[in-house]
Length: 219
Image (tube, rainbow, N blue to C red; front, side, top):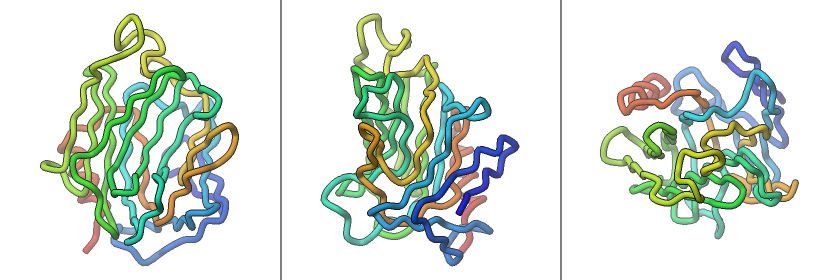
C-alpha cells in the first residue's frame, strides 16, 4: 500500500508489510501497524522534501506491553552504518524512553525524554531548534513530560558550524518509518502502531504541540 502525504508536496510513503488499523484514538485518522520484523514505510528524498534544519516531529504511537530487548526505531533519516554526514533518528528504548539522535558522521548526540512512554497509545513530539541549539522532547502531554537539552559539546569549531551534528546541512537521505538503516540493511524494527505522523519545517512551540495533540485526539 501507499501512504498519501496530506500536504501539497506529495511525498507519499511506500509500505512494506504494513497493515491498517481503523479503530484507534485518533480523530479521523487511520494508524499503520508495524510487525516488528519487516514492516517499514519509505519516503524517498526529493526536491520537494528535504529534512529541514529546524524541524519538529509529532505522532501518535502505540507501544506493546512487552518491549523487545533492544531499542525500536520510529523514524530514521540517513544510513548510520556508512557514516552518513547528516542523520537523525527517533527511537524508543526497552525502558519506553523516547530518544532523539543527531549525527554528523563523526559525532553523535542523543537526548532522552524525562518521562517514559506507557504501554498503549502515546502522543509524542520531538522539536529541534538550530538557533537555540536545543532539542525538546514531549511525551503524552504538554508540560511536565518535556525535556529540553542544550548541546554542550560539538566538533571543533563549536556548535553551529558546518556539520556540527548535521545542523547546518540538510540530509539527502530517504525518510524511513519503522526501522533503522545501517549499512543498507534495516534493523531495530518498530513493533506497534503509528498514526498522524507529521514532520514540520519549523520549531513548534509548547502551545502548538498541545494544540496538535488535542486536534488529532478523540475520546
